[in-house]
Image (cartoon, rainbow, N blue to C red; front, side, top):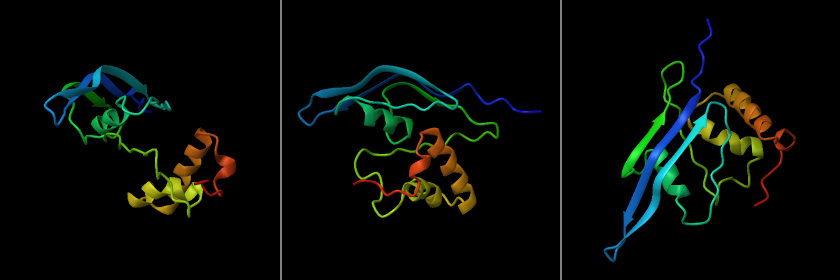
Length: 140
């Protein structure tokens, strides 16, 4: 019997976050934000500097607590909650590592064996169309 994967992987429901300013005021970083990410979806969050992207990622990753709303990560079939990672805009790749080696790096840090890393990298480079560039170095 095959276990069906959950349709929704991540649900952000009416999340709000306000930060206090040194002068006694406050700034609203997120206000009633909701989104759903389905199993197997590839999602990008794009916006100008200061619009709340990093705040959202920090909340999803558990680094910052939201003021309101909920974040739900659906466990997989073995009951494990998905691992969350974040890639920053700047300095996100090592210029001395190939595309393959850069993608492998966090998997290596998690202790994943070489063969598993290779399989994961293959999956992701095909997902985003980089299979012809795995031996290339980033253009930093």
